[in-house]
Image (cartoon, rainbow, N blue to C red; front, side, top):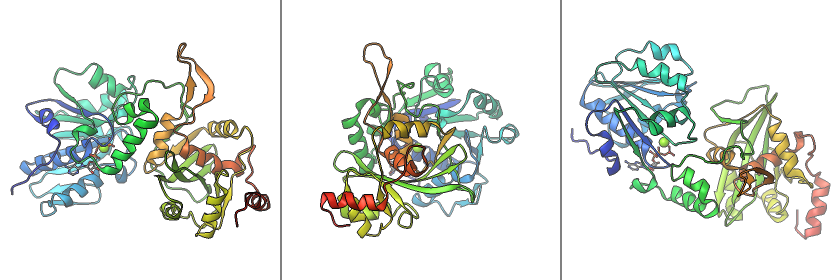
Amino acid sequence: MDLRLEVPRKLLGLLAGPGRYRVAYGGRGSAKSWSFARILLADAMGRRMRILCARELQLSIQESVHKLLCEQIQTMGLDGFFDAQKTTIKGRNGSEFIFSGIKSDPNKIKSMEGVDVCWVEEAAKVSAESWETLIPTIRKPGSEIWVTFNPESEDDPTFRRFIVNPPPDAKVLKINWEDNPWFPNELRAEKDYLYRVDPEAAAHVWGGETRRITNSQVLRGRFRIEFFEPGEDWDGPYFGSDWGFAVDPTTLVKIWAKGRSLYVEHEAYGIGVEIDQTPALFDTVPGAREHACRADSARPETISYMRRNGYPHMVAAAKGAGSVEDGVEHLRSYEEIIIHPRCTHTAQEARLWSYRTDRLSGDVLPVLLDKHNHCWDAIRYALEPISRTGGAMGYLEYIQRLNATGVQA
Ligand SMILES: Nc1ncnc2c1ncn2[C@@H]1O[C@H](COP(=O)(O)OP(=O)(O)OP(=O)(O)O)[C@@H](O)[C@H]1O
Ligand SMILES: [Mg+2]
């Protein structure tokens, strides 16, 4: 069979010749995941291989590259050759893909035999301990370790190990969106937007630079990104929404609370969304129409429109004086905030939402920057009824406000 392998030209150098480690790192949307998946599938067709797809945490197969590989098998037309099973993928020649979390199941990793290639995807947060578990396991003669990631901090063990002090037998390549001939238009718009509003953040997200300032993060040390299913006994869901238009996004979030933990389960996010497109945007979040949703009170006419167009339970958030600081305090009062990986904008904002730092001293100032806060504004509104100082505006008060602005409720 003649297989045309389409990957960015720049990656070819990384693949040529022998190498114990092949590392591709860089900004979002640079075709790292697709390319590695395609190359491994092609390799596994060429000879009988055992490929371990590893990551730091993998509590379920959904968190692995299993789905990505299955999709590539479909688009490459290889479903006659590969048989995608629930937790493995098998080739007609005996090749096999297996999936595992290093930290989640170190004993399974240690007992793994005969791996030809181990692909560590999303490797930015793989711990030093996990690398020490993994590397000696990949011991078959000629075996290789492939690594892909978006760099976070210069101090991360993965960044130190492969970028700051790469081993002599490592091939390392930085790859960005410019190198991806199939860079999608949706991502291009997001990239341009971020370069416009916050070039420093864009250099990190799209330019693949490490994040510089860390101690100015509003949610520093509080959040992590992880799969979860809401439990029966959780409080919520709570919905909140923030209005934007030309520059800022319109957002909707669905969140839950359980004890001292806060969970962000779904988000809707769109820039330049017209008012009549907003119900459709919000409909992407399950249950949004049926629940109370607290929205930015600065746009009573938008709230009124939504109430008349499928969102009868939408109310204005009270948003009193000092509410931003109170809201931040409430957010930080949780022991942990867990963001579902599908909420990519909420996760990105969690990393970027910051206090101002003094240009000369580098000190963090007690001034919140009005950037990267749109999903978190929605979360603050959603939390109003359960935060200490909050309390959504009663419907009567809301109607009075609407009347004052001359809008029909
Ligand atoms: N060979 C290809 N053919 C067609 N489209 C492609 C190909 N490779 C990549 N793309 C497009 O580029 C997009 C980004 O690719 P991919 O998800 O692999 O990037 P990435 O570097 O892994 O991004 P991230 O850092 O966000 O994980 C894909 O969603 C797809 O639309
Ligand atoms: Mg990727």
